[in-house]
Length: 309
Image (cartoon, rainbow, N blue to C red):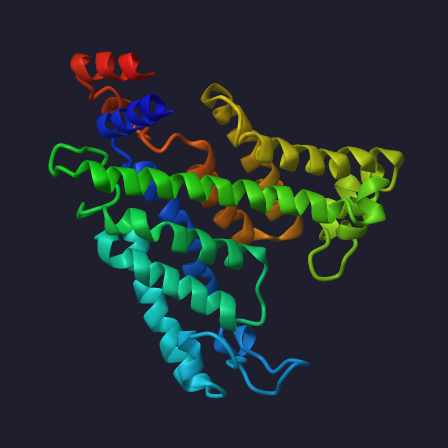
């Protein structure tokens, strides 16, 4: 067991976890939150509810929006401050400084906004799990895939890789829980759930998509998209244990599913956040999104990687 751990640590030492892979994921997640704040006035995001006439509800937690409770003017000021902070995150500037700020913004949104979906919750959790990685990342921009300009210690790399493991574990749990929760409803089991979702007033199909899909949705073929969603989600969960050679294929399938959600159900911010989450989950963290940079490895490093693999 100790030999296995030693090989794993040696492998981590030879690789660079601070690439533009996790940088792109951060930017996509932050961009979704930024667009949500830009396109929605405080009057839409913070409303009295059946639970309380106060907005936002601040009986628990430490959301920044609670400093402006029941005051749309100050809520709007905080909203624009958060938009500015998210612009910094999207730009990739100084992840060591913006990592904690990114989490606090997503936490405040998730804790205070009335009109949210599961995307804000996922963004808050993932941004929190990214904090150890951002704190050990001393690059000026998270788009820089080169390790030559700084020399991170082995302990920093261990912290980063362990954090990535818990991120992947958390994402797998999200999809597993989503699948199990659906199986508690008879509509998902009998294959008719998509029919009812397509006609739901808030997230249902618009007239165009209803017209082009009606012949399928209103027929026994509705079981295909219904059970297909369950199948894709369980495959995403199982990819936690799958060899890396299958990750890209599963990534394409997973992204396609979420883009269909965005297009037909209007879950745009949710799908954007989950795209960033899936990048962290299904794209090897030591890879880069540029083939020229990916080839920037010495022969000696390649031989060492083969020796410990």
